[in-house]
Length: 246
Image 1 (cartoon, one colour):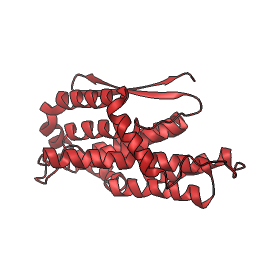
Image 2 (cartoon, rainbow, N blue to C red):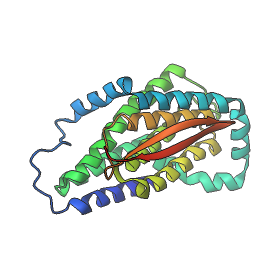
Image 3 (cartoon, rainbow, N blue to C red):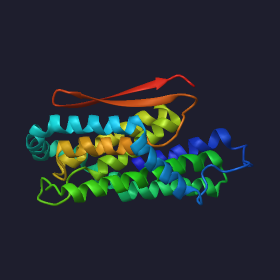
């Protein structure tokens, strides 16, 4: 579901710019990828939006934490919910998300399309940053999973899929972002029914993914899409607003 949406995004990126095969200088070169990741990492600590997202995610995770076991027990004991949510495990895996991002980047080079390469490098850069953030937190916190496993906090499936969803929102606007967000939410909830994570794990995992995606310098159709996490009783809400062109 999610990888298919990303491949579709590569096609969408290629269409408007198909006639622009000769670009003076690539801003998405492979050789420049380490430098771009370094700049993304710098923006993680020097810009306000990633910090606000992580702070909001932390507050929301604390708000939902008292209901962690109750929510997992309800979803995992419902055969209907478990069957409905079975499809979230494989496409939401961080490896699948990362390889799909690399695939979009490779498609851009294969068809010599600068726009597709730009979308691909955005996905790759955000997934790289998300990988280090998520894995670092997992080993630092070492929270036990609902099924007794290790490294529950934060959810890697949630963080990786929300990276993809937010990059697509920034690159293409709601036409790609809304379905991708719906898929990310589905993946996050599926981790609860499988007893792989608690709600607080997936809430903060989503925040980590969004923070990683918001380190990018992306403009979609002249607008900037801003995602603001807002704690609500028992959980969190995400508000998306489009700012006018600068």
